[in-house]
Image (tube, rainbow, N blue to C red):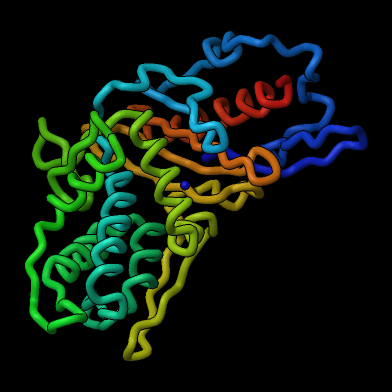
Length: 292
């Protein structure tokens, strides 16, 4: 985890070339011969984002960055770490604890998927509050957990040096202070970790909508805040974010080939242009990889 229409195109040669946009013709794809073994194609892109990063999870290296270490407001990309933290707490405490939200009790994983897909601030706050007071499965004692502190602890563990969290949603604290900060490079690494360790959770974010059911039989549903998710055929996961301070943020994971996940993070764009930025970056990435 966008104007990204992703298809995995197969051509009748010895190579398998992934094409990521449903509205792009085979003839418009650049051939390997025309490719340059440099990053000039990325440098020429008309990006609106202040900071971007393209991370190859297979090699563990960045293909391209622009102001990749710039520390910027994260907005709802914060919810990725909120989910990771809640899941980590659940693993060592109470994996089956239901969460109270909107007057009903919900399965933790189901509510988390809903909150990620819909970018629900109240849903994530309910999860954070529930996991801040957890009964130990071994002795039945109740433990109070500094949930945001847990988020920051995991960020440190993952060596996300520019990242810190002030709340669990990423909402701006006030007109000058964001709810969380980090860099495009950190967000790419964070998303790579989240999608690899918890694919059953973050995989829900590749679908156009979600509906979940409570313990009492109530249901809630939502469209994905990634408005172009239906165009993405090779998508693994995605997460949007926008606040007044952050502008438009986006992080996506897509398969650039057979078992070749690529992460693209876009920070400091606009709510509209973040999708175009990610489109341009993914097309350039496909061209770059096909030339290798």
